[in-house]
Length: 579
Image (cartoon, rainbow, N blue to C red; front, side, top):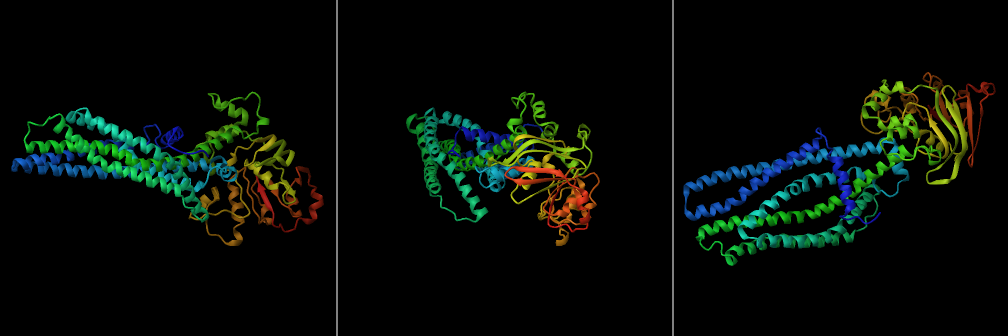
């Protein structure tokens, strides 16, 4: 990974983040919340103006000893202060809502991409350039949305208007020297902070990585001395500029008094009011610039975590793009398909991968839910059932990290409904690797693999030897539809629950390690592809695929007569893949 800083890469990734958090449509909650925050912030700045000029009015009223005007001013001040308090509380409330909503959108989008099209498997098994995926999807998203919505959004959105208006007021009261002095001062400050801030972006990213390493592996924390050093230096410079701003305001006030002699004709009381009002104008303009400088530390934090979050988004999008465009290896891509990503994208994907992947690409949540519930969808009629689950033609399979050494070479196989297949072989011969290819987790390096099933590959259900039951109470229906939830079951019955859950889907693959004679009461029309070693499994299968190792294999019919005498054998510790 290159050095991260405030550069064009950050701007591009920040633009990606904004598009994700603020989709351009009328139903976007975040856009409406952002608009509300912007309007309240404008009202707050108006209230700030009236609060700021109150002391100058009090100086004049008290200097003139005008009691009725003093009573009226007290009433106005009370209303203004209450309005200011309401606007501040409203800004905090709505920015908090905005941060929560942004986090919800970002978390949902990343988790959806993470679990879709097997991206989580590829990201955790073959992607080494991204650290601590869990931290990026939780803590980094929370920090990004919190800093963006609560710390930066309101000050940054109002800064241009505030700076323009108070620059005009400063010019009107002190001439061109006042704004020129302030702009020159903060141009210098911005340049200094720019060079101090850039190293912090990469160091914040590195610090977040160390935090994730500590949390995930409970490893020894190495002290990040560079980050501390640069933060200390940036803090010194920021504080110097913050406190020198007050002195600069008095230097500007002296311009119309001692240089231009604008107020020579005014009395002491009137001059006090003018000085107080102008001091507020200058101080608030300086404060607006100083506030932006102070926010540079927050901007550094935002840049660091933005890089981490958007890096994950970019990698997930790349994995999804690879899944759509290279689900079949390059050697099998038809020569007529040259480019994917034009206006003919849908047609090209269907030509390259078949209708199955074309439909997979456009599937929405509602359709997935209907499929899991077993209801018919509009696309069911588009898929004629030809009785063939998969056709493998001269396919060579190798591990993704070692494509040169073939696990299985030149395999030709057709999985047909009603023809049960038993896969056997010694340990390390490639049985599990073949299952990964069936499920679409591994791609063949050569040859051709056509999947004919209507069910999308990411819904190709595997039930492992040790069933996965996460914590949290769910309904029995959820268990049956998608058996990845935790319900308390007796130890001896756990192996049966995944098998029962697999009855809800066809075609579906389920893996279990505890098979009894009750397995013969399988759902009607379901064909099994089993992986095991025991001879007793052969009575339930028609074909045997034996993997010999070093890429070699052989396939033959199972003679039912030769195993008829062993039909009463108890099934052992075998693995079954039902399709």
